[in-house]
Image (cartoon, rainbow, N blue to C red; front, side, top):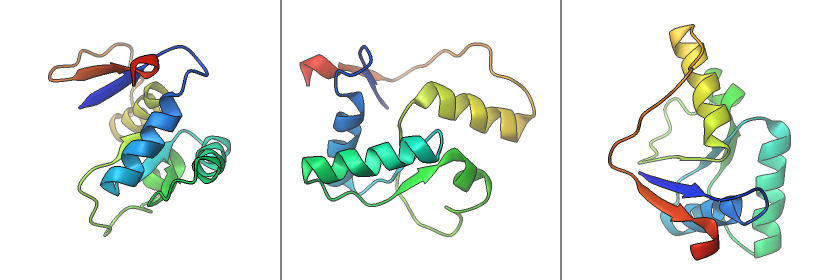
Length: 108
């Protein structure tokens, strides 16, 4: 797993868009405003990305039956917290992560 880190506005979402274009993986964002931003940003970059979904669409089964080999998460903390709260009926308070590559957006 790759984790793209950096302050607000340094290009983390742009890096996800580049990854989506290169891999064909869809991007899942926290809400419709976030999804619209991703689509608009991709268009401004001239990037052709597969799909953009919201966590609500995932919860409602929008990705069921679609054979994606992977997904990309924008604002992952919000998406993961919401997804786990939905599936586990509990609020995520902390996480630990193994096997990650940190990519600082300003280094990309």
